[in-house]
Image 1 (tube, rainbow, N blue to C red):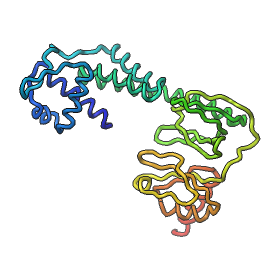
Image 2 (image 1 turned 60 degrees about the vertical axis):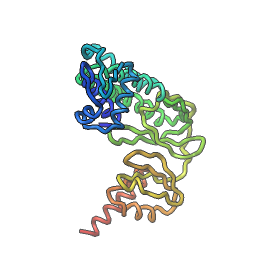
Image 3 (image 1 turned 30 degrees about the vertical axis):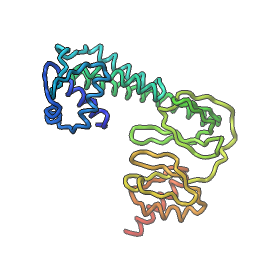
Length: 287
């Protein structure tokens, strides 16, 4: 569970404590097992949601609410769909505004309604991703096989002119690797960020730097220092994707081999096969 979802749950629990009760902030912190900074964050969220909280001395209450609002299954489905639309149709800033507005509506509901709405949202997102991934991958693969240069437009509005290279699957996500025509460097974009794919013109072959793309995991990804001729392709919380332009592949592979299971060579295919052969040879020597 993310930090944000924990805070949302605490806000709901805090609201339920305040309905028809007069209670101190220390009692709320004790019951919810939270610290004062979290109490004030939840208090602000409730106030921002339009919930009138009365303070009488040390006691807090939401006495104007006679009961918690309960949503029907249809209403939770509509709320889930609104959050889903925010995620899939809107730029990130507007996405947050709509998503937060829906979550605020859930503050004055039950925990069951809150959980049910988010569960329906996750199901919607999963099904949509499966269909969207399939359509986008088929379309990108079609243009790749036909040797078309493309223009892609991201949800953020950013555009890339590119030549397609390959796809990469990781943790139920699909990433699209391509050669950025402007800077002649490889890039990697999550398929879900692409909203438009436009064929531009045919090309004979991809002229590119012979970079080796590899990925580092865990603690190594966090402390890794880039070597000469290296650059970051993409950075995730738990892994790091790096492009190495070194001409001496043997020296590079020997270094990557020392990283053991914390490293994986991704592209190009000939480098993946060469690295695999080196690993197999090393295992044979051990036997």
